[in-house]
Image (cartoon, each protein chain N blue to C red):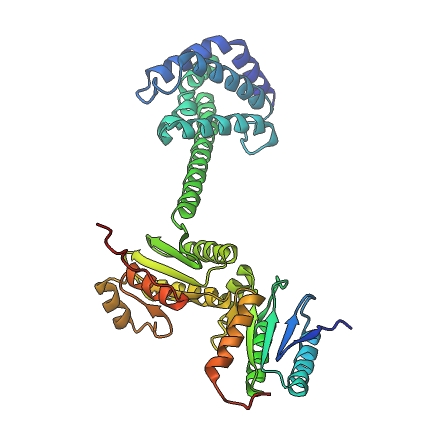
Length: 285
Length: 127
């Protein structure tokens, strides 16, 4: 403990020198993105981090102890910011890892020629900084994953538009693969719109669905069944020749569902059921 | 005990479920509805479930049973006003209820019953 306190005191005393060295390493590192971060800003961040670091090391060298929480919070903040700015993981981790060199210099000056103690202390510091580096990468990855899942969510909402074709006729052009999560969103959107518009017929167009396997077929049938329970009829359109072949080869039973080759055909059926007709206007010339 | 009212509308019966469908309530409804169909000589049943927001497999089966029973008694059942969440739940439970008729609201259900009677033609002598 006493040794730690001394070390912390030392770091605090020589903070300016360490900071200068550290900055030099960070700036000289090939991975520094000058286009993304200003040097003055980096200096300020580094100074704050070094302060927290020296405080924490005075209490313990175990990064899982509560005294390291402020350091980790600050690191997490830096990491999240860099992830959002578009830094790569190694660029982000370099921030902490480049602190090794100045700290090793410090240790060497303190311990001098005592080989065993030098090795012990270096090992201690390496462990510490490696932990922090790994933590940085972890946070970086987490925030990137957060971005990805948010984009997925947005994409999902964008990709399931329900359009009104006619009074009481809705169309749902599906584009992309259908998985369980997406079917759920599609179903909810469609049923909600059925309630809002009082539609009697819904046309699900699968022209944009690249493959139909048993699972996709099952999802489609679920959607059709749920729509029927709401009191609206479903027509599936846009079945391409290859997909028709696949469906039969897989033994999927779509007999209970009205299927049409094109959206136009399905629309015609829908109009006929509603008792409406569309015809070309007589030429006026 | 809670009871579900059964209203007579011309040749049809209207059942609006507004209470929580406990198992006991559902069984009572089954009893009373079949009795009323016979005593009123009803030709159709409108089952309005627009205020039901929670269903389980029992209630799902119950709705199917009611529909089958009334069909045996020559009264067509139309389930109306099912909420989206309820429809999804029933499908996920594997209860797509393929044999029952459905409509978006009471209005549409009534139209459906009337047209179904016309289609059925002269199955029974007119009253």
